[in-house]
Length: 236
Image (cartoon, rainbow, N blue to C red; front, side, top):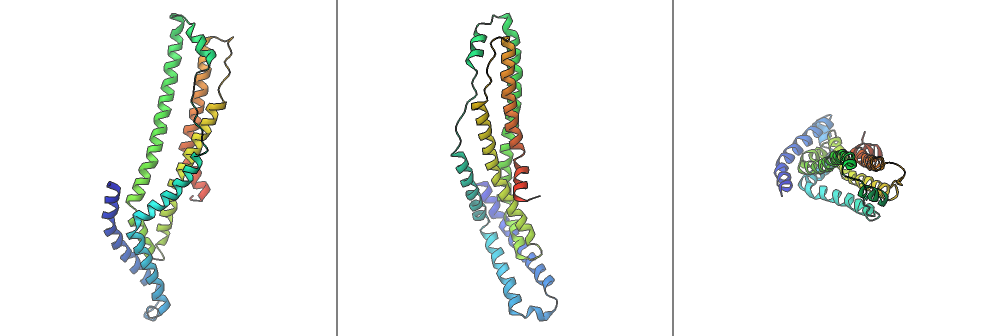
């Protein structure tokens, strides 16, 4: 596994940063040599050093544990999701079947434009979801470096920010699933009622327009998943 290999390779750099952050914290906290002789001073920094060392050495396990917890939340939400498909209303299907060759040319244009919009939106959707997975991989691979910051009191904020950001990226999966759930509800209950008194091109365009609108809602919700998570978790 490439991610595991990179993670293991960066542990050596993480240990080096750990020693550096630990030394910086000790020298910054000690106002005099007398402070270094106090047992509680040494014990506090020793415990912090041990915790940071364990965090760096178990970075992969920590990332996997956080991902598993968030994955359980996503699976729980997915359990309430019902599959829905976008199907052409029977009224429109019947009207299209009765259209002649020359009258079908405008329908081809509507179909082409609708398919083009939906394809572009689907591409944006796929790229957004794949981008989230790439961020998860990068967070996991580079985990030993920011976790080493727990060795120092003045640098521990970097490790806390890293864990909160990683938790936020993992929880974006829940927002993505919720967005798909909303789209599924729109697709299941928001099918337009075809007005047979209208021309078949108009009926088809109304249906394509509503499908594109539902896709825009889905893509917009997924694109804003990181912002929603930041607001919910106070990540700023």
